[in-house]
Image (cartoon, rainbow, N blue to C red; front, side):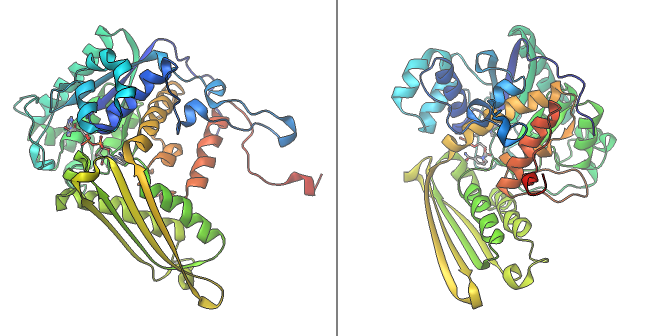
Length: 437
Ligand SMILES: NC(=O)c1ccc[n+]([C@@H]2O[C@H](COP(=O)([O-])OP(=O)(O)OC[C@H]3O[C@@H](n4cnc5c(N)ncnc54)[C@H](O)[C@@H]3O)[C@@H](O)[C@H]2O)c1
């Protein structure tokens, strides 16, 4: 596969479209505003802080990623969103209680000027929420057109050269792909017929792809991961990625599990439980919405540990995930993990992890990186599923027939090698040539 001949420059403003102006979105926007004024550091963001090695170790070439590939800078970002509540970004950030006054006060004016557009919201997919700031239209096809109008108007009015979208809306109920999701034609027919298997987030995804706007899904629900959407992404040359930001407990899982496997240590059981009290936790308290999250979280171990290859070590793992809504904690989640592992001659051992994490603080840099990398992908002529961004997702989307890669370290290597490939640099395999030279 040859590298692209050229990557279009990141000139002009980049609109970052955020369906859902809640805890994650506002924490992301606030962090970008603070960082561009030099008031805070964008910790956790690979595009802002990360480097990559080029050539041999002796060459001592380790540029920053943002100097190596042409990415939009923080100064070029324009933020746009939709929500079913009309609160502006400042009010919403206050409600979310993630950031303290010392971070919100200096950017209050800018945050207050970011008001959400009316949402496309069908309450049957998120039963715990009821908002009034919503669009009205007879069919789902009309809703797609209304979203497309919003996108075009935002780009025009705010003088943006390009756009990119990251779904930061609530987790929707569990929906399996069905007949309506198979082809572009069946989906478009379904839009006109208000097919109940077409959810709100699918309408945003469809509208973005129709406009050629790259779309990444930060939640675990079905949104662009079905055959019709994949076909549309290819047809409109749009990059898509998903799903479910890899933060907190699953991030830990995909750091620990590859380590256990690398050392051929066995696993008998892994019990994960969480308490959290934000709006996301409230939505996930509904069993149908939790089911979406559970499916996303459970797949991880199976793929990393490969029980079919190592039946004696991982053939009988008891894996359980629980999420409990507990309002006093707000966004400051606590995730407990108990791992029952075994070693030499089968002797049992235990590992306990108690992660007092901040969900939105971990998710915000992912939104930034996805926005910038998805825009890079588009300018590089890439389309369809961007597997090289699996690094950021709990449930990575893959091209049909492939299994997802969950191991954080393989994901990181794949991401960096894709960047090297984009610039025509040699891929790094970590093979020690010195043994032969
Ligand atoms: N924070 C994390 O670590 C993390 C990790 C993985 C996934 N996620 C997912 O990211 C999403 C956002 O998380 P959050 O903590 O910001 O949640 P949140 O509840 O604070 O914000 C979600 C916002 O989306 C809005 N919304 C819901 N449906 C909408 C629609 N159809 N159109 C427009 N707006 C809509 C809600 O009104 C709300 O303001 C959730 O789906 C969550 O599961 C978060």
